[in-house]
Structure formats: structure tokens, C-alpha cells
Amino acid sequence: MNTYQAHDYRDLIAHFLEVKIGRGSKAKLAEFLNCQPGYISQVLGKGKIHFSSENIVKIAHFLGLDEGESDFLMDLLQKERAGSTEAREFFEKRLVRKRQEALKIEKQITAQNNQDLDEAAKAIYYSHWAYSAVHMVVSVPEYSRVEKLQPKLKLPLPFLRTVLTFLEEQGLVTRNSDRYSIGKTRIHLSKDSPLIKAHHQNYRHRAIQSLEQENGFDLHYSGALTLSKEDAQNVRHMLLDFLKKKEDILIPSPNEEIVFLNLDLFTP
Image 1 (tube, rainbow, N blue to C red):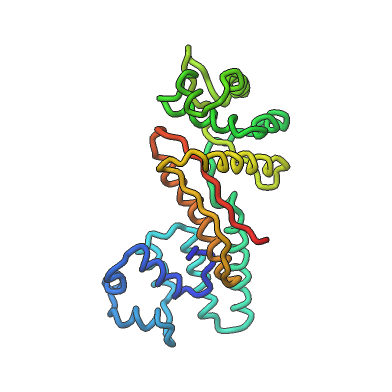
Image 2 (cartoon, rainbow, N blue to C red):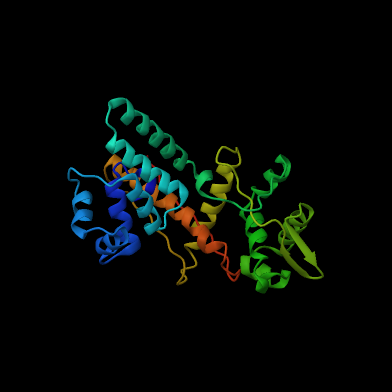
């Protein structure tokens, strides 16, 4: 469950207790709140009593929620405890706005040190998968030299040199003697850019090519799924949540390997 798809604060707390705390989570929460475990079970079982706002603040701290998640949890509580239709509608509108914001992937992926190329340079950069691949792979010391980079990406040497020259001219890579290193760390193409379709097509063609390699690392999945409209949204939120969480791995991870990631989820 993605935080922002929840419609009941109790369901959200129960989910976080399961995935973040695990066995004995209710007892641990009761100890943290200085209350009886039966009280936790009664609230989460959707009885007539609710947590207080003070409880929610403590629970958010106990679960390690960030500010946005904590605010959303509090609004869910306030909507549930609202004493009038007007108050309930007020908090529901707040929740709807937050869900809409959460659907924007740009709000979930924090790209650091973005480089905004001019439109002509962007057209070249996104014309072939090699430009972004070379841009990233030179950050791996093992592949910072042309003689190592070329067999890794299996690019014709003249084309590879053309790509490197372009990236160097744009300040996206730098060269020290015969070694290249990454210049600007990240470039993110907005989803409303006219170049986004070409960018996605480039890497999907590359993914099709990888099917012929049959190595032990590659993973491909294709399937047609039938599920409820609500669960279809749940799957979409899971993928968005994954894209957000992968940044926590990428940022501190040393540059040792390059992988290409494609995710496809669509209706016919």
C-alpha cells in the first residue's frame, strides 16, 4: 500500500506496523504509547473509539514517517473524527489534493543537480540510448577509458567518440588525459516533453536486444493482468513507490555497474 492511496488512517497504520515493525508490532506500539495492547487492537479493528491527534503524532514518530506521510495520516484521522459534513468534506478535499500531488512522479523523484540542456542539445541527447548510457557509465572507474567503454556498451568506436565529444562539449562529462568522468550528476526529462516518447522507445528497443543475450542477471516480465480498478491503481502506486525508494539506494551506492531499467504498466 502506498501512503497516499489509503482512505482510512487505521488501515494505513496497520499496514505500516506490518511492513516496518513486524511481529509483535501492536504490543511494541502499546508500550511506546504507554497504553494497553487491547486499546490498539480495538482502534485498528475499527471499533467506536479513535486515536487522538496526540497519539497520531507519536505513532508517526514510532513508524519513522516523513513529514508528508505524517500530515496525510493526520488528515485521515481528522476526516474520520469530523463532527460535521462540512468538516469531513474539508479534510477530504485536502486528502484529494495530496493524492493528486503524489501521482506526479516529479514530486516523488528528487533528481539532484539537474542539468537543463537547450532544446537542440536535448534533441541530440535523447536521439539514441547511447548518449545517456555513456553519460552514466563513465562514472564507473573501470569503464572510464574508451578501450574499456567500447566493449562494455558494444558501440562502434567512431560513434562512441562522437557521443563522447558531444557530452564533453555540453559539460556532461569531463576528460582528464585518456579518462572520462561524469560532469553533471543527473538529467531528468519532464514527462510532458515532446522528447519523452523517443527516450522511452530508445530503451525499450535496447531491452528487446537484451533478450538475445540470455545472461543470468537480466530480468524480463510481460503479462496481461485482470484486476479491479482499485487494485490497478494499487499496482501503479507500488511502482511509483519503488521509483521513489530506489533513490535511497542509488545516492549512497558506489558506481560499479550500469543497468538499464524499464517499467511498463498500461491499459489497451
